[in-house]
Image (tube, rainbow, N blue to C red; front, side, top):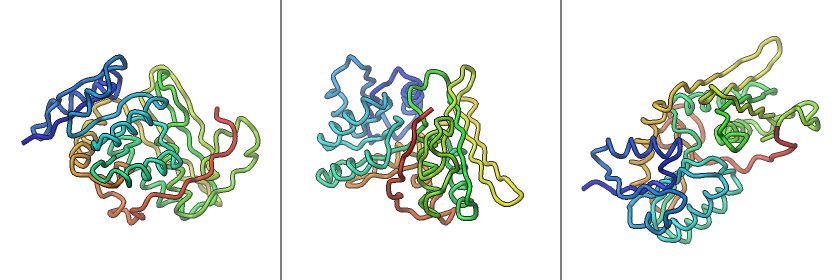
Length: 261
């Protein structure tokens, strides 16, 4: 029997893609598509609740779903390690619930983050430039923060020069993150790693929302089977952390210093 899915934020950029994916899945059945004016409790009859809302609203929605014993797929940005730590404590007290948090549903993005995490072992200098459409309300992106946290977890915090200057971006694990918000952009991330006489650049471009569909399907299937834990990252859903030889545990919170852009 298909598992049932409720999508909160169904009319938004991500939510509309999730609805389309669920409707095409033989393993799942869409039972609720909720907007900001709909009662959240209507989602709790489903097996899986998808949060595709806003960073300010997401913690409350996810917390309420966990308290109701639901399995939750989180696609909303803004889930720092501090927030995740609080979520893990809540899930530990509600073992029937389970949460999968995906900063980015793109397979290419997950691979690029994995490659950057491996490369971080061999370089002492790193910066991240991320660009998204002008309508994205948060910065830096959850993908950039997650990438920086994983990189710092591999080799310890980086030491960026002139980190006290505002133009140097927001520091995560000692890595400056520079956020661009431009019309005409879907999503782009560049990780630059510098060494003696060389610069390694790892770039990923999203050109269409279709890039997220395979990751959404995989994450939904994983969420339907998740209880008593918080799983973070598409890399863990797909087993890329094992394939790339990376630690499967989540990193400790990376320090966030300095003003954002």
